[in-house]
Structure formats: C-alpha cells, structure tokens
Image (cartoon, rainbow, N blue to C red; front, top):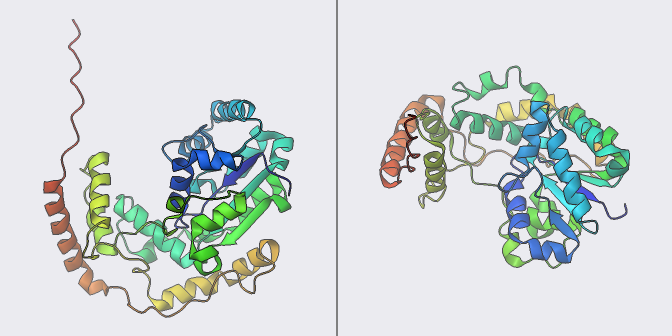
Amino acid sequence: MTRPRLILHIGSQKTGSTAIQSALDNHPESLAASGLRFSRAGRKHIAHQRLYQAILSGRPRPAFLELRRELKAHPDATLILSCEMFLAPGIAPVFARFLGPDLCARTQVIAYLRRQDHFLEALYKQHLKNGRVTGTIQSYLKGRIDRLLYSPTLAQYDAAFGHKNLCVIPYERADFPDANGVADFAARIGWQDVPPEALGSGEVNASLSLPYCHALGARADLPAPTRRALIRALIADPTGHSTANNDVLSDRPRADILRLLARENTLIRDRWCPDRTALFAPMTPATTPPLPESALPEAIADAAAHIALLLEKIEPPPKPPARPLSS
C-alpha cells in the first residue's frame, strides 16, 4: 500500500502493546525523522484510552474532531493511534463513520493476536487482580467463549478499512526480528533507525502469579496510586515469586480450548494470514504445571502477607486538600 495517513494499532492484550506504546511516546524526534507522529488526540498517558472511552460512551464526535485537527496540523506526517481495547466488536464501524471513506482507505490497521489460551489467562488474571471476578478460570470461561473469537472483529475492520489495509500478525516472537515485538512493529510502520533504547526487550509486561492476583483482588481498599506502586514493587521483586506466565491452565484444558477454536484459527489463517502453515505455533507441554487447587489457599495467604509487608514501605498518596467551607 502507499504511505498511510493513519496507523491503527489495535492490540490484542498481552502482545507487547505497552512496550510499543512506550517506545512511540519516548522517541517523538526519531519518529518524526521517519515521517511518523504518535497522535496526541484521544490519548491518555501512552495509549488512546480516551478515544476508546469516548466511543464506548456513545459520544465520540469531540475526540474525532480533535484527531482531524491534529491531522490537519501535520499534513505530512502519518499519525499513529494505539489501544489494545480497539480490538473489540463495534469499534471499527465507529471509526469508519467518523473517519470517512477517503481517510479509511489511507489507514493501515495492525492487529497482533495472542493464542487464545494465553489470551484467556491474561484476561482472567487481569480481572482477578482488579477484583472483578473471584472464581476459577473454568467458571470465568462460561459465557465468555465469544471473547476468544477474533474473526468477527477482524471482519469488521476488514469491511471498514479494506482487506489490503488490515495486517493480522500472530504474536509469535520467534517470527519477529531478534524476537522483538517493538522491532517488528517498527518495521511494519516504516520507523527507520530506531534508537536501541526504544527496542528494550520487546517482551510483554510481566504478569503477577495466580496467588498474587487473588490476593491483590481482595484489596479493594487500596487507592489507585498505591495499587500501581504495589504492582511495580511486586514485578521488581528479585525472588521472582510474585510473577508467572501460563500458570493458570494445565495442559488438558489448554488443549481443549485450542481444539474448540481450531476452525476459527483456520478461518483467520486462510483469510488474513495465507502464507502461514498454521495461525499459531502448536502447544507444547508445560515444563512447570500450575499450582494444584488444594495448595492455592495457602499460596494466596502467603501472597497477602507479602503484600502487607510491601505496603508498609509504600508511602500513602497525599490526601486531597480540604474544600473550604462555604459561608
């Protein structure tokens, strides 16, 4: 395709989005040298969460007007929008409505897809540590199988932006330059001479282990700044006990999920990734099985005790100033 006017990076979760967004946010001059700009319109911190929230609220017009003003102010730059929550049903038609056919035809959409068993674990642990769920992953999966179907959302982006403008990439780091997700994204958007510090490791964020997600989810009393500081401290824990990936599903339910979604993944491969033998690399047996359910309560108690110790070292956020009494 010719050089796009807009690039939409739409996720999915646990595909190195934070690393990509941090690289874009921290190196505006390097981006500009390649004719690229990390759009400020609709952005909150390093992701375009404000634009996503505006779409969800049903009042997206002001955010899209802000985007159009930025496009007009930078006529020679390709603007980049990035939010992993864009990979959801109903988002693409809103983009199509407010961008219009001419701009949609000049937009490149980039979607990295996590293998669904890993994607399910990431969602479950995210909701668990935020206190939104409390049960097992088996109960969590009930009624949520549609969340593991990428093809309906990809079809909406295909219809909105055109088949040739949708780039679907299975998140298989072995396929990336130097196994680095940031380097792969940079190559796809034409970002040249990327600073080495922007590449980092290219890995996804470290994930709290299952017991720590349970323990953190029980602390609804923590203010948001304290919670963020606590998570940073847990991830930096030199023992490594507080973080783990792929520690929820055992091999059998993992294989069952992939078997259930085999037709879905073949459809995606045939339509958007025809050069691949299979959409994702095959599952390999776990080297370390998940914690037995019988051992989980004790592990959660240990995690809660560790969290309590760390909280003693974290300064509480300042209290907001008291409002003056009205006369």
